[in-house]
Image (cartoon, rainbow over all chains, first blue to last red):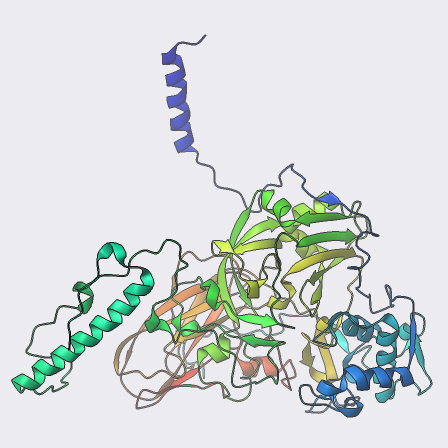
Length: 196
Length: 434
């Protein structure tokens, strides 16, 4: 057994050492060895797994809906905010038109003019619409109301049926309308005197 | 008027104290008016220069408010004007997908109080029980994982100071001076200390598979808001955050869990975070194609414009204020999503000449930096502005310089232009962007 004086001396040395090299956490922080996540299977999270990769429709579910069925869904559940024929209503602006407007000084943004890929309609309507009861529409209803909006924009014929195969094939006019972020795009100079 | 006996100290609750204070203030006011009338003294309202000595403050002469058994402190009732506000320049016809702005002119220091952090929601604020909340990580990983809040709080925590700014900050004020105050022009900006777990730890635990390049983060709100984010950024400095400025997140800031993506537009810091899915390419959802893209020449749109570039604004004096000739300290904020602020210049002559302002430390990467500049206003009308430089060497541009390379048309995001305020001969400070 160590003598008390040795223990005390060691403690004092540690105290001094501790003061001299107080540790500041590095940035980025060192990854700990602990792991607290619980394994789950894809089946466990099937109800959450609703995202659609819109460029190719990966994730679109089974089901189908026609333009005519979509008109009925729209007039039952969407018209109050978006107005008749999706021309704009009490709460939101139009969801039709605008194609060809982007080179003018009044760009009109609608699903028809703006979305590069048609499955964006499915992803967004299913997760977010109607605003007072999102995720309440069945896949058939979502396909149908998407078909209706696409038809109103002149992008699919009146007899079109949207499903996991047909929807990604709809050619959207703004498909090639995007450029990846290329900033910084300005080269301001730090002028200090007689600048203008 | 019957004099009310002062209550016993031991019997006074905070609520009773409020009643007592109001009652006794009313009584004293009545008595002093009576005394003034009796003595025939006319109040002159001559300001500070007065013959009578400073009166003893009422607060020296009565009970203070006792300490409540439990409490959550709130600002003084005299600060009631310091509030988040929806803008009255761009009015939405519903308030579920809407925003409210931080009162920057009243922010002292670089920490935005939690009740004043700006809001942007896509379908309101959800009310989430943390005991039921789960975060799932899946997709291109070796082992999909689920985390409860208790699980996440067991990890060593990391706290970092960062600003957060909405890409739409300033969108009403490109080509016309539509807004009056700095709260309206720049209030989609806040700053604070964010606490949580580095996202890289959780991604490493799940194990990214070969080819993983992007992830999508999704919220548990009723818009199911989601954004695609490159894996490189996720592994660099993203955090899964549960606390802000020393307490658990407020519901409107993502309680109980949000993503935080330093330096990038606020909407990618997905609130109420419930799911992260790893993939090999972006998802191109509505929020990153039809919204949160920037109009460019030739009818094009800039996509995945995540960085909030270097920017600054003078908050004092700013729009809606009125100043007098003499000494003023010009104050404001500078920040950059790409690094540290290395300099802020102030012009008090409409941009002809610029002088270096003083930066107040600590100057932190991707955080608000406060600047100060002492100015003696001689009373002649002028225009003041600030211009920031960051550690990449980037100089904050003017709107004119941005308009040369972008299309300023419609609902335009990413306004980081130099922002001037005019000062008129009578001291009125006004938005002078155009």
